[in-house]
Figure 1 (cartoon, rainbow, N blue to C red):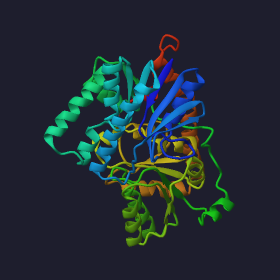
Figure 2: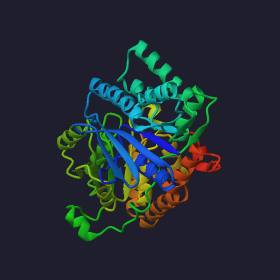
Figure 3: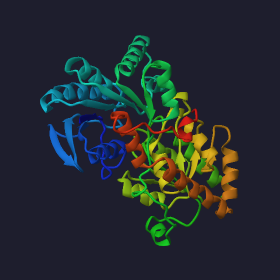
Figure 4: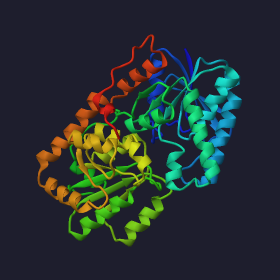
Length: 407
């Protein structure tokens, strides 16, 4: 079987960022499937590389999280155009595996099905266009209707659908009730991320103390809610706590967060340059808790954030600022605390207790790693994907309790 894996933002672990597609593509190749990734990149012209048994086609489509709305849309459509030009030159594939975001990648699937008679499976990472609508990036009523019509068409024309969370799966069922839907969430890389004991030497190299430490690793954009972490840091400073707050990431709001921390004189907040997964693991090794946050929009409650699964593998306690699937997992499996709107004081009080209850904190951290090992391994995700792509050779797996939860 030959599969074209369409993902505009394909990344390797060495590059850092979201590496889901790397692991899934490699897993499919290891299972004997011929996999070719078609992606965009900051390259001057078309490039091709072999990466761990997967042929990767790089199209010259620049993209940056700091792009404005119009520039982003141009990048999305440019990728679609160049992918449609490339695919006929590669010879015939048996299947396209198309992953969002953006939703426009679905245009490639629709085109390939109509023009080349190649079926496609569509993977939904985030709910589009609902996410940019709720954020306020898309306001034009005509454009909203057009995008929702496109979304429905992409889902209904797909051979099957893959959702990254129970909430996303529910959204898909509401739009395309007749299509098959499999939940394959983001997953934990148990070899690359693992629990560490805090090292005095490593703390010293990062200019940190052996105090309660909370870390955020991920995008620093409009929807990521990291401002609330600064609010918690300010409360800690006001209460003379020596807690430390670490922020690693890039995005359109990074400079704004830095300026806010400086204005509030938050010397307990440390901004760290974005780095590959090894650096993320090193940062998490210094932390007691991982901060998992989003802006308070209903659509964002459905997310399946990479940073959460990295933190599980690293054996970190979890602090979540929103209700949804992640919140339910935290509560059901005793992974950490919630820090919901209007309840930051309660979260602060719980952190004060945990500061003096190391055994209770260690239990939360152990629960995180155990949950990752039981349900969220990349091997399990690959096995589920194989059952979606070729169910005759790979019987469907029974749905686990963690996926049945509603968001």
